[in-house]
Length: 201
Image (tube, rainbow, N blue to C red; front, top):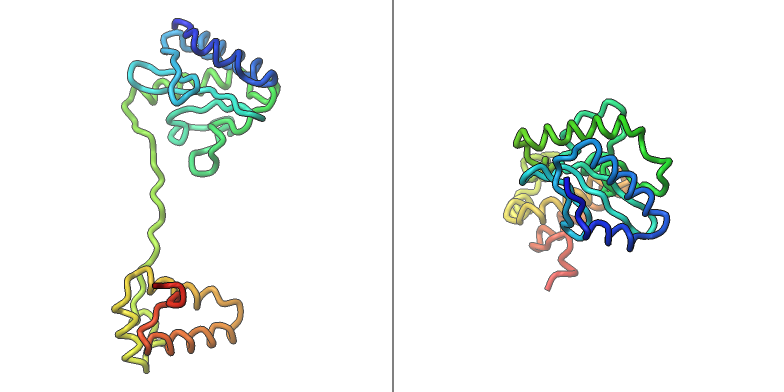
């Protein structure tokens, strides 16, 4: 692996605390995976196997990061990874001193795993956002059972408008508050009003 002079410049411009961390990680990558390509992408050093991104290092004002591109799909036998979705700090979290890094042999083990995963053609996992339920008046016979006109208005609303009403009711802290909100909803539905009608133009 050829050393990219742009990475030398990147490290030289980093905060003093960050430089020994970046240098150590860079040397570890060089010694563990000498076939990787070193380049600057997205304004920080990245390491790839052909077209497949493997890992990256970066420096910030108060911390550094070392991230595996497919870290969310890698095994974690030593429990050192912070998975995508849990944090945006990078696979090893916020690193503020070289002493915080896991043992080199652990990192080398994970790096080999990351390279193998990249070569396998695995793509980066994207966690799907949980879908919010879509409510209908028939789902709440205890509320709409005797209020056909309100039920018809409720069902004519968009899913987001229906959701606003039901979440407003289900989030009530007390039974008394819940009953008051149900009564208000029924009154507003009779007038064709949404939950946030006061703010609509």
